[in-house]
Image 1: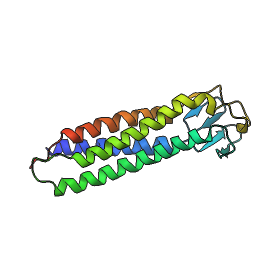
Image 2: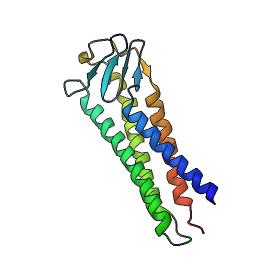
Image 3: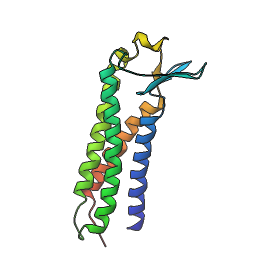
Amino acid sequence: MLILLAFIIVFHITSAALLFISTIDNAWWVGDNFSTDVWRMCTTNTSTCLAITDQFREYQSIQAVQAAMILSTIFCCVAFLVFILQLFRLKQGERFVLTSIIQLLSCLCVMIAASIYTDRHEELHQSYEYRMEVSKGQYGYSFVLAWIAFAFTLISGVMYLVLRKRK
């Protein structure tokens, strides 16, 4: 039982780490001499970054991705704290339903963010404010990590729903 508990905790911490990395790191869309995320666009040649502001086309879509990724990270961290509290407060045989609901909300938020970015990426990268051609890029590892975090939060949310507290 202790091994299962350790696995669940490590799995949850891994999910949170994936969410933090995909939200913060600058690699949602990458090219030969640039990388962009939901916060800024950086050129690798000159090492300069340009913040994505309301001057950009499709800024509302970027804001939706930003908000959903931040919410998913917060929900994942709150779910971990609730799990630790429920670990000590639940009676034997009860399920971790509240933890599961919060973790599934995190899963939903990261899915919404990645889906919006997937749908709107062509319009997002054709804005003239980028000062360089960024439409000729490809999805970066932060985008891939966001989808992996979706799978991890979904699995852990279902795992918490099935899990019962034992001795």
